[in-house]
Image 1 (cartoon, one colour):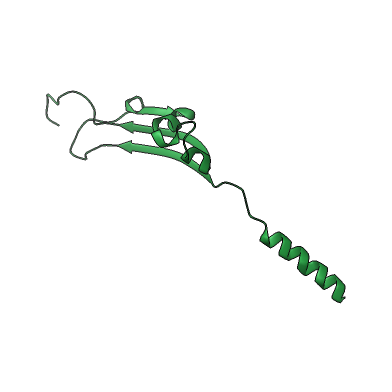
Image 2: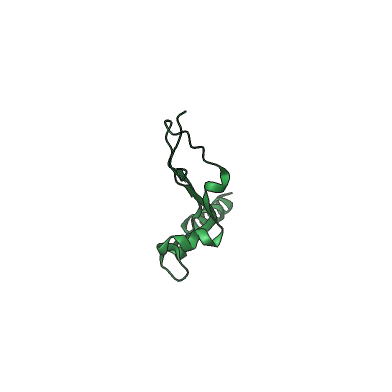
Length: 94
């Protein structure tokens, strides 16, 4: 029994002392809109400027291929979208 306990303790100690070399997993997503409740302009889906996949990584200079930061995690770029207030002047009242 004592021998089994020693082997088990040694095994647990060995596993516990191993460094976890897995990188953190980070998803990137962004959605931005500038809007006002006083504006009659309605933002539509086509008003968003959208990036997907690796274009999201390329948008951020610190995440470009070969950078130090890109090596520090597993990056999962999803989307980045932004919309500015609708164009054009308001020519008539509400």
